Amino acid sequence: MSTNITFHPGSVDAQERVDLLKQTGVTIWLTGLSASGKSTIACALEQHLLHLHKFTYRLDGDNVRLGLNKDLGFDEKSRVENIRRIGEVSKLFADSACIAITAFISPYRTDRQVARELHEKGGLGFIEVFVDAPLSVVEQRDPKGLYKAARAGTIKDFTGISAPYEAPEKPDIHIKTGECDVTKAVEVIIEYLTKHNYIS
Image (cartoon, rainbow, N blue to C red; front, side):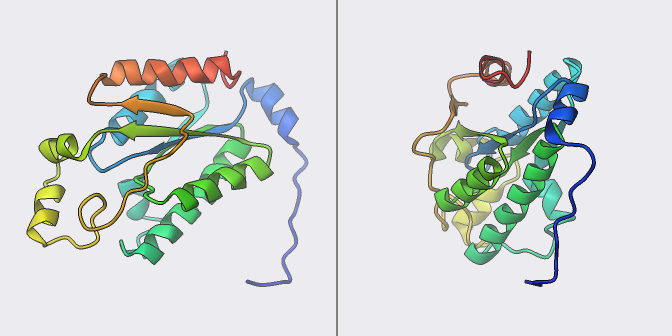
C-alpha cells in the first residue's frame, strides 16, 4: 500500500447530510446460503424503502461480480477479498446517508465482523440479517441448478456443499425463509429500522 496518500475531507459533514436528506446511513447486510432468499428480500426491501422516499441502493453478489469484482474467483482468498471490497463500498454508501442493502453469501464470520467494525469505526450503522434456510430447503429450490452441479462435482468450492458456511451466532435480525414469505421478511426489517431510528 502506498504511504504517500492523505485523506481529503469534504466541505459537507455527516450531520449536514443527515439533516438535508432526513435519514441516517446504514448498511443492511443480508447473509445466507445460495437460494436462501437474500436477493429476493433485498429487491423487495429496496423497493419498499424507495416508496417511502428513502435514499436506498442494493448491492447484489452476482451483479457486483459482473463489474467491480469480476477479477475474483470462488476460492477462499477470493471470497475474503470479495467481501472486503463490499464492506468498503457499502461503508461509502452508508457514509453518504444512503441505506445500503447488501445481498452476499459472505460465508465467513470473520469477514462479516471486519465489515461491521469498518462501519463502527466510521460511526455508521451495520445490521447483520441472517437469511436462514436449511440446506434441504435451498437444495430443493435450487433456481440456478447450482446445488445439483455442486453435488455432481462440476462446481468446486460451492458454499454449503464443498465449502463452509459459518452461520451468524448473534445476528441483529434472524429471518427463517422456510417459515415466512418475503412480505413478512421486509416487514421485520422495516420494524427494526424504525425502532432503531434509521427511518421514521
